[in-house]
Amino acid sequence: MHPQRKMLHNELHARPSLYFDEPAHVFHLAFLGDNTQCNSLLERLCPDTVAAQAAQGITRLEGHPLKWERHAEFFTLTLVVPASSNELQWTTLPESLARGIEGHAQHLINAVQVVVRAEAGLDLPSYGFKDPCGSCVGGGDAVVWSDFRLTEDGTNRLLFINRRLNAYRQGRMIRRLLEIETYRMMASLSLDIAKALDPQLNEFDRTLVSLSERNANASGVHAKALLEDIALLSRQVVGSTVRNRHRFSATRAYAQLVFERLGELRESHLGDCQRLGVFIERRFKPTVRYCAATEQRLEQLAMSVANLGDLLQARVQVEMEDQNAEILRSLNARADAQIKIQRAVEGLSIIAITYYLINLFKLIYSGLHTLGANLSAREALLGMTPPVLLILLLILIRIRKAKNH
Image (cartoon, rainbow, N blue to C red):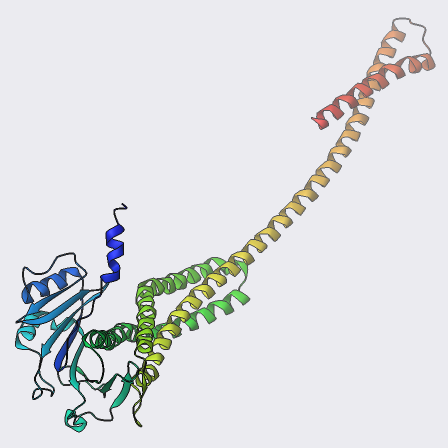
């Protein structure tokens, strides 16, 4: 069996729901943090009952079921406290849970309280909702109300009215509602980053326009300084992209989960009220789109800067090729001039050699005539001509061989 067979198969059971009957209070808390912080919190709440590497678990806190889950960058606690029909109004966090999370309050990213009850005897105004949203969920088997307004301690409140759901369907339905709120908050973490990036991106845009104009008008002598400025802008854009890529990618993933969970609610209208899914989508989608637009803007800036650098390098390369071509033409002209000079020198050399040979033979003729040789000038000329021509021919052959070599 493959060593990862059991681990991979058990991923199917990695996120079980809590199953319970109404009436009850459900408290859901989500904290930003890693496994170390999660273990620290769990040790305070329920020591000796948590596996250090487990992804999730269900234990009990003061006799009530407590479910904990680890995620990539956050962890959650869900506590279900059964209630009587007289205890169905909003209440504070149980003392044991509030005491256990005291050292982690600054990492709390989401807090939701859900009152789960039956429809009989419902008095909706008593729950204090202002302009509430309501939906029939699960094909009309349950009703959810909320105004999505935080209390003074930062808690979002949901009223869940069970009509025909059993404990299993009710647990899964409430789990979807809690995941929608938690994933929505996690997806919105990049909103502040996107807003902070906006003036920086505007400055990058202005710098890019300036560099593009300089690239269009600059001569080759300024190419080095321009290339350094483009490289600086590229480093800044790429640095911003790398620093924020993970957060924007997480926003896309969490947003997709939110929309999937909204679809799984199977909402329908409840009177004239706005549906919960419509309320969330109309206000959450702009956040997701703004973050996606900021990420796309960063990527386009990086591509534009890279293209500008490529354009500058191509222009410099063309200018260098033109300069090299001009140098080659100059070298060719010099070579032609040298060849012409060399030919002229060869001609003059032959004339000079001929002159010296004739004078040499003239001296020989004068010496022979002085010694009494009876040679006429015509005979001497005829005698000197073949040696002179032969010597000139040998000299020409040597010059040709040297040139070929």
